[in-house]
Amino acid sequence: MEIVLNLVLVLHFLGLAAIIGVFLVQMRAKSGFRTDILLTGAITQVVTGLALVGIRQMGDLGVDNAKIAVKLIIALVILAAAILASVNKRKGGKVKPAFHAAGGLAIVNVIIAVLWD
Ligand code: HEM
Picture 1 (cartoon, helix red, strand yellow):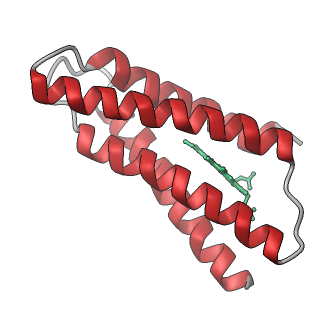
Picture 2 (picture 1 turned 90 degrees about the vertical axis):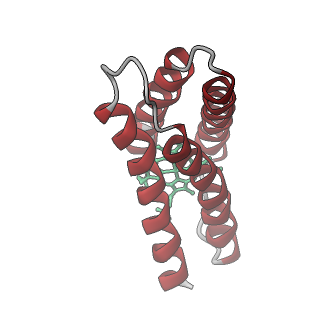
């Protein structure tokens, strides 16, 4: 069980790297936003995050419900922003605000993950 938990945790880190990585690289861009990478990362975070909670509960490893609830809400807002950025890109609308919201909130979620005890 521990190996499964750790493998899903690795995917969780890759998902966060996708969101924050593409955000940092394109922070000053005005066009050409890679919303595909952002969206993949956002979906990965929700899926792997929920899987981590499930695996931990199966293994009788507790989770901090309040912390997880806050992280989940933020992750869902990130997902909504990533979808909005993707749709706007396809329609030729503004991408930057949603792109920045998703990247910034992912950094907030890292801070919560690490600092909230
Ligand atoms: C953008 C969204 C997210 C980011 C950036 C993020 C970031 C992180 C980071 C940096 C860690 C490792 C530090 C730690 O163990 O406290 C972590 C662990 C964890 N995350 Fe997330 N997370 C996100 C979304 C979620 C969601 C949506 C859930 C659940 C619904 C979740 C559940 C967990 C759990 C259970 C762990 C602990 C894994 C373990 O140590 O066994 N995360 N997350």
